[in-house]
Image (cartoon, rainbow, N blue to C red; front, side):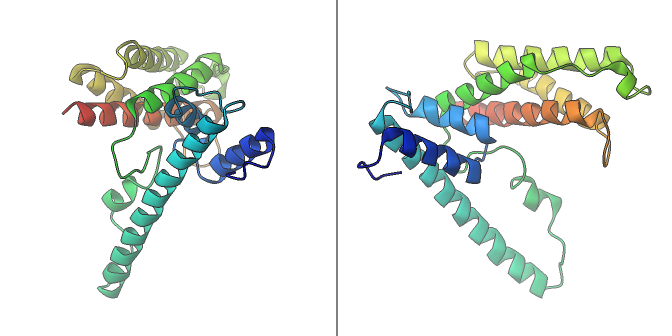
Length: 214
């Protein structure tokens, strides 16, 4: 990646492989985050300096992630020695789902770019057919889809500055989508789980933006 003797296309490909190995927001959202924060020239395919900035951002996040994992592992060793074999749900909650580990607050610009990328994919994705789950009214699915779309549009329109009522609406939407998912294999999950991943990313970006504001 840092070998300037190599063609830029190979270094670009290497960065994509690195994001494939470590993409805390998911591959596409992480790539959008890196591209946005590599400003002022975010074209990673043609700008060697931007490519290096993106790599530095990714490396800093991974280092923060590894430090967090080391702290978690040390705490779990102590807890296991004390007889607590299963970690608390609150202890593992922050390790699941999209999150940008960093020694500094995540970039608002980067999170907006990540949400915009996944919002576009959400809008293009096929919609579930009501026959996939006859016990769920298709109007309920349509309502949840529209609510999530509205939450994302509001987030992007306000550049990440959702007010608390709008953030509460998003939280309720996430819970409602999660409530419709089914354990194990379910044809409907093929649609709902991508919705849920996007909703979780949006919720994280919203919460982070509120924390930055205050």
